[in-house]
Length: 212
Image 1: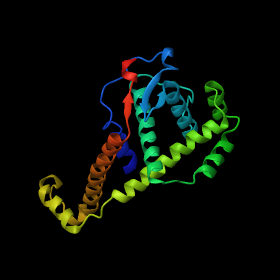
Image 2: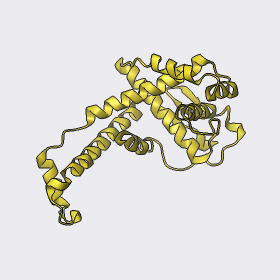
Image 3: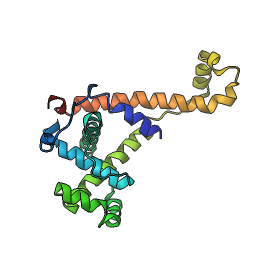
Image 4: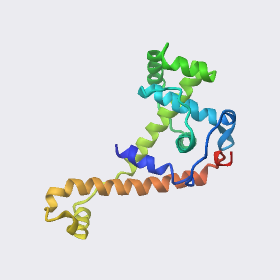
């Protein structure tokens, strides 16, 4: 849960606010973003969301997003591509192929076939895309674990004393677990913001959808 809450906000750190405006069919073969000379098309965003919907059981699977929803999906893809590039740079790999193959096997004849047919994808294409997403997710989880600090008793007490008025007479011991969770979340947020900014500096990213 902490990871999802943190990453939702972090997508906006390296890309400026605003909306893409109304989407139309002319964008299907258009370019949404470029990262390290790799083109991310509008269709890539449609495929990404379709696969995520197929994986989670959301309907309709083939819904093609517009406006800010489309923009957020493109942001997620760019973030994922930066993470994958960083993994390669560090020589980090995750064995996710068996998990992906098991999921694909369970999807044959259903939503996955609709995605393949609509976007002209092969099973290998989908396997590669899902493997990248899963590997990137594992790497981010590992990163969160490595930047999550141990909150000391002294740190917790300092926070309690600085904010004692808002606790309305509750004892330190009664709210200590909540303070620890809060301080951990703040520390992880700060560390991940710094990490993502470093990725942005390292990997060249251009967002083009706003110009459409």
